[in-house]
Structure formats: structure tokens, C-alpha cells
Image (cartoon, rainbow, N blue to C red; front, side, top):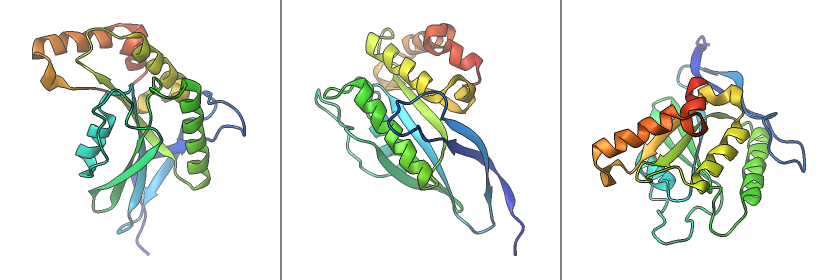
Length: 203
């Protein structure tokens, strides 16, 4: 029997109580994963952001799969989807695509319940999130109301103590001059009500 090698990824998403709304009492946890030589380890990462932030395009790029990208006014991602790719010979990454909280057809509370339901089922099936990626469009001249609401819901969903397991990323840089994009990114990073507070907590 080959000795187990300690992995670098951590897992854990605790399910909400039956019938409850998501809260910071269940979230990305501290359970450490171990990988045996030759065994494929599965890692689950959530991808979130406002509708049109580029979540589906990001997953397309990572996985090589054509999951579809919305071109119209309606949100393309209507329900939670899971897409996997091999990062290395013994590491398989599952990206979890989620609807934006500003979905064109559903209330934020409905989207939140869907995410809570997925977390509960995935926990039962031993699928635990290792972390989250939050995408923001750099083409937006300012943090709009829907984007701020989305970020607020995202923060509450994860919980402050788990901010260190969150990656904040910007998209659509090819659509803005580099200088303007850099200025907007700095504004996101400086202001506590945008990304500033999360960055101070390790994001």
C-alpha cells in the first residue's frame, strides 16, 4: 500500500437546515483532502457573478466544453450546472456554474434556494466546495446596483471567515483600454463596499 500524500486542497460545504435559507452557518469548511498515488482527486469550485459576467465563457475556456454562452437579453444559465476537466493526471476539477442573483426570470431568493439545495445534495453525495470564483465585468464603468446586490448576497452565502478561499476576478479586458481597465480594477480593490473588505480578509 502506497503512503498517502497530503493534498493542498481543502473541502467543505455544510448543508442548510431543511427548509431554511442560506446563512453563514454552513459554508466552505476546513476538512483536508488526501490523495493516494495514482488515485484521481475531485475538487469542486463554484463560479458566481452577475448575469453576463462571463461565467459560461470562463467555464468553456477551462473545460474545453461548449456549454453555451448567452447572447440575448435573457440569462443563459437558468439552473446550476457542473462541468469537469482534468487539471493533472490525478486531479479533476469540477466547476459549478450558477445563475446570477439578478436573473432575468427569477427572484434572488429563488436563485439562493437553488444554490442552497445544490449544496445540501452535494454534501450528502460527499461533494464539498474547495472554494469559489467571483467574476466581475471590467467593462462596467461603476458597480451597478445589481452587481452590488450580487456581491452582497455572495458574501453572505460564503461567510466572512471563508473569504480566503475566494478568488475575485475581472473579465472582458479586451473590450476596454488597458488604462481604464486598470483604473476600474484599482477602484474595486480600494473600496470596502466593493472588493476591499474581502481582500483584507484574504480573498
